[in-house]
Amino acid sequence: MAHAENSVTIQRPAYVVFEFVLDGTKNKLWRPAVLAVERTSGARTGVGATYRQQLKGPGGRPIAGDYAITACQSNELIRFQVTTGPARPTGEYRFAERDGTTTVTFILDFKPTGFARLMDRAITQTMRGEVATLANLKAYLERQQR
Image 1 (tube, one colour):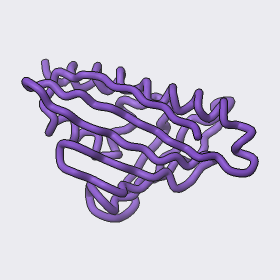
Image 2 (cartoon, rainbow, N blue to C red):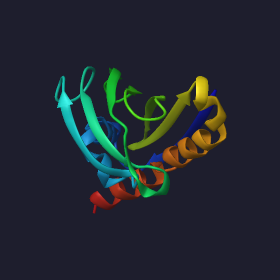
Image 3 (spheres, rainbow, N blue to C red):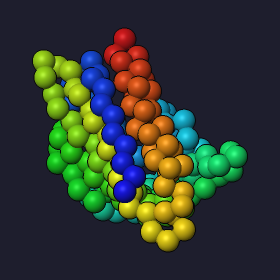
């Protein structure tokens, strides 16, 4: 199974970080691989919300990376399932507030089957790059504080 995980501590309260991450239309502001994103159905945010994403794929070609929010606990947890694209990992954001700062952990898991098993190493590398974008989230949200 491909797995990637990363954490950062952001100098903002949990509710600010949580609400920002939960609104998938803001992905383009901090995830460089996102070319376009829009909410397509479900709740405005939270469980049931679905998002259509166009991502930078291999060689810069656009690929689909749509996803749905599958679990949500205010200021603590967001889970999602990628529903289109060559790899369809599950993901999770965990939020822990302490003294006005928030530690965010981003986890991606993917169990490759069929042809995708041959791509396990490349998929893992891509997932590691994706969870590393938490540094961009930190920089963006801390700039907004000023």
